[in-house]
Length: 62
Length: 133
Image (tube, rainbow over all chains, first blue to last red; front, side, top):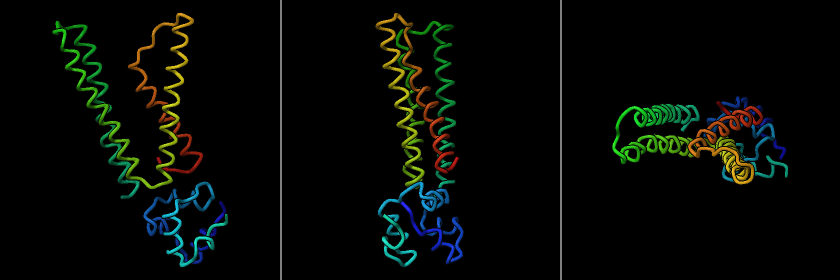
């Protein structure tokens, strides 16, 4: 699944490590989600949406 | 909990438990060969490696519950591959024992086989998917 996390993260000038800390996950997890190698669970997707102030469907392409 | 802390907690329990398992197993074999033990002694002594073995699996269980969902997925895939390896060896070798007079395989070796297959799978999947080791 494609997503806009890398773009949204860079807009805020956050590193993957910073985003990982805010989400309470590992940097490897952020890297895997950004790279499209892992689709997050619904709770983590909601966490991302809240953090970026967007709707889930604005971040993830189905 | 951070992945680093969970990983540290995992190895801090896993490594000593593995060492106790191996040394107590070798100790029982040595004692059986060199000492005049009562017949019930090996049964009683086997409690030690089994307790150590339980600790190794508890360490793995705790590690999986403490890491995040992506890393947990890698670990669970690796465990399934480890179990598949064990099942394939049991079934394949069992058939060879029945139909081809292959020598009996000690079921003791299935636990080490699981750990080896699990570790190899974890390394490969981690390298492919970008997890942590």
